[in-house]
Length: 357
Image (tube, rainbow, N blue to C red; front, side):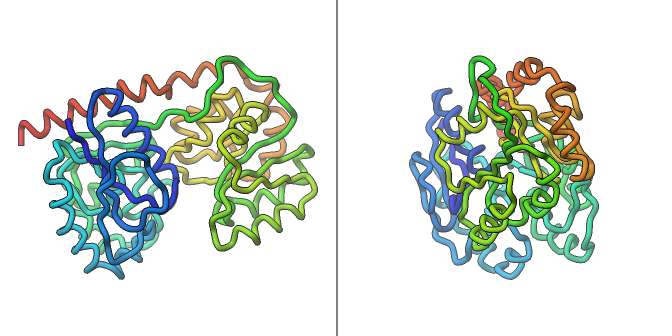
């Protein structure tokens, strides 16, 4: 089958990593994969690309989509000629790319993310109503959720948007780093994330002196405020900042870290946390979001906090509280082989859905 994946590649975030994992697995299953990319291409997916030139930038903020509503409608009209020869079209970026004739992958409720909290409570009802009208094109679509957390949000909010999925399936990403055995660990805390304030670094600076061990912060410095964030973090004595590290360095940091600290409270899944488990690094995460519900399984394979003030104590007792071997073995839940198996099931569901239309 020729399968087309709708995506944007202005960056390489979790959604794009997921799309590339799908493409690789589909290729291994014998399918032909093309990316239909809307907007500017800043990252080369290394697969055949069909580029759709649009009049507005890729946005993760529905307000921007509202402002560019006419361009959004124009993009919807353009897409059909780019996918006319595709046997199946998977939309991995449905908040930005309006196409509903195939499986829709939800990474959280991206349609309304910025007006809901981590529990799915709506903070702006009038805007929620307007956005619901825009995204009602996805009513009766086959929804693929990247986590149980996303599925729970969807079950709470999609009906309020007038969207009832025809089929549902959970397909979480697989780990990107792994090791055959538990590596030699060193006494430092690792945290990864783009170097911008929204990633929780202000809170980290407040509690860092109480942690009393080395903290390594690594991530991309591609934000306007990255220079400011780096300077501020480096002013704290026990924080080392490593911007724009390569994959090999990232792998080594994971392998030798004792604990991994996740700071974002509303993460939809959290590949960074999964990579910690896959390298036998004990994760400490907020008690909200996909890392807590899906990866750590509410304390089974890591520790959780409600308030950042709890973090120093959790780090100090992590080694004596949890079984590192048990955490490491749990990585098999999210192996590439399991990902491929669940993707095969999703394909089967999509094909059956098409034959009954």
